[in-house]
Image 1 (cartoon, helix red, strand yellow):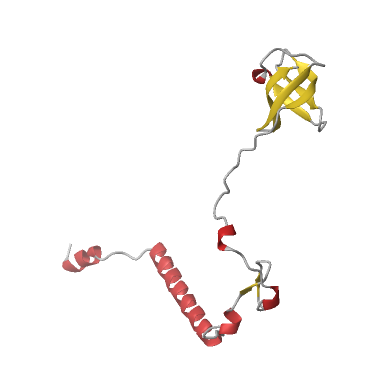
Image 2: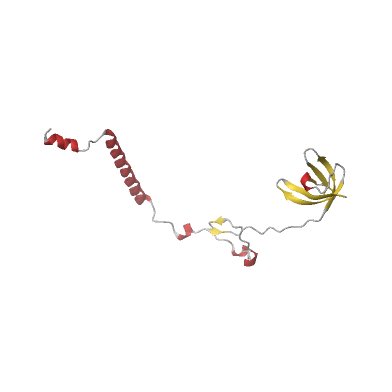
Length: 156
């Protein structure tokens, strides 16, 4: 092997894929350059201050016109609550009602409230003594996962 052949072997061979990738790279660079020149030629430097200005109206909506000062509302700093409001425990009085339905096998039923007429769910775990349909009962109401639920149920 002579020196020219050795020199030829040492050079990296340019394959078809390498040529295609290089063409693609050059094409993308050219397109990017053209887009940049087009933006420079057609684009404004920026918007005026009036075009960039946004206002908030008396209802808190974003508007392009300034709000009317006559419709301005005043708020006290002390009245503004940031975050989740604290949950206040409301202690409801003991209610009375009658058991409209109770299934001993499944351990649940419903009580009809005497005052409001609403049906309140009851579970066997919230009973202080056994009950059956038609019994008059005293109970308290708490909000459960699926709505109001009777607790501390006692026969009258």
